[in-house]
Structures are given as C-alpha cells and as structure tokens.
Length: 338
Image 1 (spheres, rainbow, N blue to C red):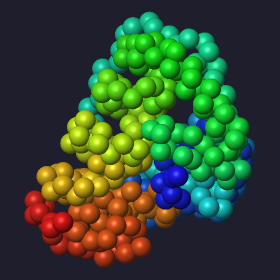
Image 2: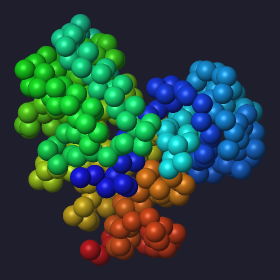
Image 3: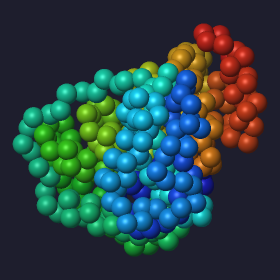
C-alpha cells in the first residue's frame, strides 16, 4: 500500500479541476540567484486568497507571467497550480530561469497517424473523472504492489481493472501509438495505458523512451508508470538508465521535477555511489535543495530522501536543513559513505 508521502505525485494539475479554493502556498523552483521575495511581492495573487475565482487558468498564467517579467525581466518557465494540500487548498508552483534551471533536450515529436481503440479512450476518460472525484474527497490511497495503480476507492479501482483488461487485449495498439502517433493526447493516454500492460522489457523500454517525449503530459504519465513498476519490482531498476533522468530534476517544468524526483528516489534506494556522485553536481544539487524546501510535505519528500542518501544520513524530510548542510559541506565530486 502506498504511504502518505508517496502520494505526492498523485495530483490534479491546474485546469483539470478549477473549482474555487484557497491558495495555500506559493513556492518556486529554478530560482537560484533570483530574489523570490521581490517576485512574491509583485504577484497578482496572495496566499490565503480564493483561487482561481472568476479568472480562467489561461488568464492567471498570463497575469502571473507578465508580473514576474516586470520584476526579473525574464519569462517564467512554468506555472502550475496543484491540488491539493492537507487542507484542500491549491499550491502554486512557479518555474524560474535561474541558475538552478537547465534546459532539457527532448526527443523530436513523432509524425505517425495511429490512434487508440475508442474503448481504451473511453475507459481512460472514466478512470480520470473517477480519480479526480476520489482525490477531491480525500480518497487518494492506492495499491501499487502489482506494478500498476489500483485505488482503494472502489469506484476508481473497478474502472482501473476494466482499463487494464482492455489494454491487455490491445497492447500492440498501445505500443504503436506511444511510439509513433503525432497526436499528443493519444500518446499521453497510451503512456498511461502502457503502465497497465503485461510486464516485459519491451514495456520498460517504451516507457523510458516516452519519458523524454516533447509533450509534458506524455513524459509525466510515462515516468509515473515507470516509477510504479520499479517500486513494485525493484529488480527492474537495472533496466532504467538513471543518468538520463538527472537532467529532468532541473527542468523548467514542474511535472518533470515531480516525477523525476519520485523515480530517482526509487533508483537511489541502494545508495550506489556513481549515481549519487552524478546527482551532487550543480545545478542538480541546487534543484534538489530547493525542492526539498517546498512547504508541502508530500511534494518535498522525494527530494529530501535523495539528499539524505547523498549526505549518508537517515532518509526523510524531518531534518532537512541538517541534510542540506551536510550535502553542501561534502562538496561537488566527493563521495559519501554508505
């Protein structure tokens, strides 16, 4: 069964659920070298206010982007309002083009015309709707022990099982669409579906490839599905090229960072020194530190866990400032003991 901390990646992004809530927190990433207090003061929205109110997600993105540009003279890399904190409020994450941001080279977009069977698309939509409803009620617990997500919520679980059954009968279409369709939405659904396919090395390879898709939703779904597989079956970690995912930790996209930190926390469970040494290099270590200081406990959990391993200390976020101090003291390129 998933732990409370591990549920951090199961979120509802801005625009998927725009019912009015309070804005619980505003946090930043990619902000090293920038004055976040000046940026915060210049924002058109404040913590504690009702959000999104009578403005559309597109209006908020435009307003926030314009106001931040007035302060720093550069564009934001991302604006994500994520649902929800433990009080049911939104958390606003703003991506900055500071020294802890690095551009990621994604793959070229496919140009094929393949499409998924309508039954898979319809079931996927129903799973999504039921999942959002369950999360909004606070029912986000899930079982990932089988290598794919099964919610404890009975309605979601039944639909997920039906979705898996359909995917098992249409696996070749799922592989084909994820690999070659030019339609972003089709590939995003296929990435979700790939997580429910029969386990195989081919499945893992397809998810690794799609982890660097040019579309952020495809990447998000692929890395999440890959993480669930590795969490359930640790022996699969050796099939995942961990160094390729390091760049995503400094991405300007919140979903990249969120899912890459989840996956990297799984890949560093054995505390192998070469991977920890790679992570210790800037801007990756700076990115992990700023994520570990996010105020939402679930969202900072994985970065804090990785940093604890880099420092050779106990894992977790309870002593995060001590962990950060140890990582910074060790310095770039110095190995930590197991």
